[in-house]
Image 1 (cartoon, rainbow, N blue to C red):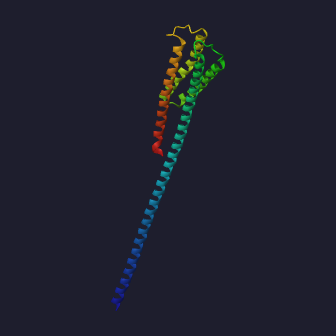
Image 2: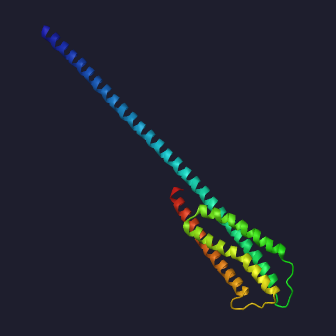
Image 3: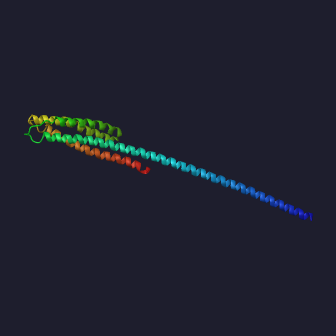
Length: 211
């Protein structure tokens, strides 16, 4: 009888010990699972924060690039507008001076003053082009400006030539000089437009991957 009770007691104790050990193992396993889950959540949160920071930086770069593109476009367009204003007024003045060798040259001082003012305006806008760059565009803007600055004296020489009856040597006279400057101006303007468009395309290509 005593042996039976002893066996039963040992069995109960074994069961209790086994249950307690199982509980401990289960508790530790749950703790490890919780720790792993918490670490996964921490890493996911950290990854999301990093991704958000990258998106914010990309957006800032995009906005900065947009502002740079808009500013450069405005600078280029203003310079072209000023250059074409000089060209247009110069054409009008040239047409007034050269309609016929036998017509009297009228009072064109006001238009000549407009040409001078337009050249000064272009001189201001070319400085902004030089600041924006790039080098190829800046160099062509300088070449355009050189042609523009040559127009007023060429027109004045052309007017004097008309007033003197057109007696200058035709090979070295102001007519040829006027047409040469005018032709080079148009050529440099075309080159400037092409270089400006290429510079804008370069900025757009840099912006593309950040969309």
